[in-house]
Length: 111
Image (cartoon, rainbow, N blue to C red; front, top):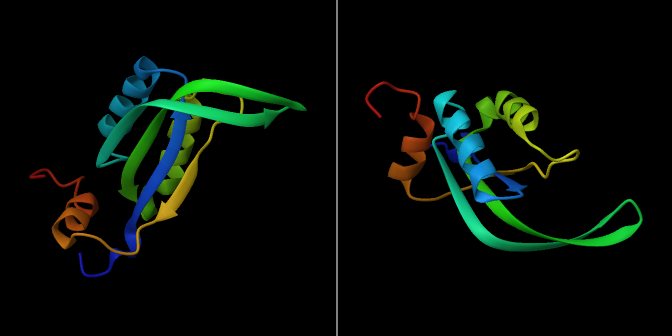
């Protein structure tokens, strides 16, 4: 993938591993992500409705294509248990060319 501008990473936190695995499986099944890494042990501190909150969460790191982002966001939001889910898209500006190519071609039958 000579032009890496289509690779993105989408970050989202979920309340537990089971939720993360369910959402990851669906994103992969719908071919909206090439890979979803679940990172347990995240402790989030945030302000919500005027109060400081704390939560143990699992971070989802979703590797995907920018052109799939609108559908990915819609699918993630529809499956997410939070009223206001964290969904943050970050463009990938570079990386191992072969890996970025794999992200770009994850919908191909041979990949």
